[in-house]
Amino acid sequence: MSDPINHQRRRFFGVAAMTVAAVEFGMTGTAGAQAPVTSLTPAEAGTNTSFETLKQVKAGVLDVGYAEVGPANGPVVLLLHGWPYDIYSFVDVAPLLASAGYRVIVPYLRGYGTTRFLSKDTPRNGQQSAIAADMIALLDALGIDKAVVAAFDWGARTANIIATLWPERCKAMVSVSGYLIGSPEINKKPLPPKAELAWWYQFYFASERGRLGYEQNRRDFNKLIWQTASPTWKFDNATFERSAAAFDNPDHVEIVVHNYRWRLGLVEGEAQFDALEKQLATGPMISVPTITMEGDANGAPHAEPSAYAGKFSGKYEHRTISGGIGHNLPQEAPRAFTQAILDVDRF
Image 1 (cartoon, rainbow, N blue to C red):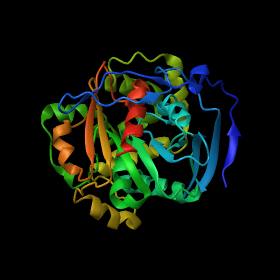
Image 2 (cartoon, one colour):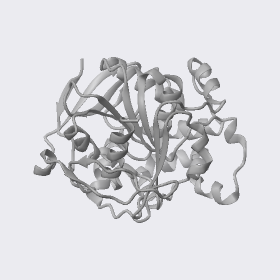
Image 3 (spheres, rainbow, N blue to C red):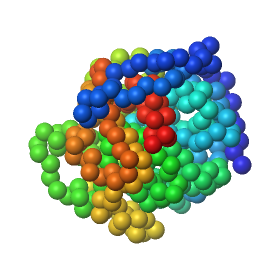
C-alpha cells in the first residue's frame, strides 16, 4: 500500500484546470504537416509550482517516491524524468492529463528525491535495465497492468526498454529524442569529435576527479547542464531549486556516476540483468504505438529523427516542437507533450 506525504506546498492548478478549451502550439512533423489538435485544458509552462501530495510505495528493491494526480480509476500514464531533472519536469503536464481523466503516476527514479533503497547492501547500480526493472516493479506494486509511458532523457531510455522487454505493460509511448537503447559494446565505437565534445560530462564522470567534482558541486553542475541543454529556456532560480532538492538524495551521485561509467564499459552491472542487456544490445525494434518528439533548440546530445525512425515497427509519428524548445521538453512545452500523449493513446 502507498502512504501519502502531504508537503503543504502551494499548487497552482488554477481555475482553468476545470475548463476545456482549444489550444494551439508550434508543431511540425517529419514532413512538415500540422498535427491534429484536440481540446486541452489551457496551461502555459510554469503555471504550476508543485504537486499537492507525494506518496511512497515499496516496489522491488526500492521505496519509491512518486506524485499521483487524477482519478484513481482512470487510464494510467507513467511519466519518467531524466538526468539532471526530476518529477517537476511534469508539473504542468500532470494536471492537464488529470483534467482529461487520466490517472498520472510520476516517480522519482532511483537516486532522486524521496526514492530510497530498502537495503544498504543493494548495489547502487545505474545501468539501463535496472532502472527499467524498477518501473515494472512500481507498476506491480500499484496494481497497474498497463500504462501509456511518456518520458525524456534517462526516462525515455527507460520507456524504450519497457516497450521492448515488457510490451504487454506499455499501451503506447511518447519518447523525446526517439530511440535511446544502447550498450557498453555499442559505446566502444568513437563518435566524430563534435559529438564527443557534447558528451564531455560522461568522460568527466569516468574519473575520480569527476566524481568528487559532481559530489561537491552538483547544483552548479546541473544548472550548467540545464543551461546548455536548453539554451533558450529562461527558467528562474525557484524553478531550478524545486528540482535541485531531488539531487540531495544520498545515492544520487553514486547512481549518476555508475550510469555513465557503465555506458562506457568501465564498471560492471549486476549479473541478474545480463540476459536483459543481451537482448537490448541487439538494438531491438519497438512495436508499441509511438510518438517521438524533439525540441528545435535541444542542446543535449541527440540523433536526428531520421536516424531512429526505422526502429519503430508499430504505428509511429515524429513531431518536432518549434519555438526554441530545448531538452526538457515536457516542462518547456507541456501542452505539446500532453497532446502527444492524448494522440498516441488513440493510435
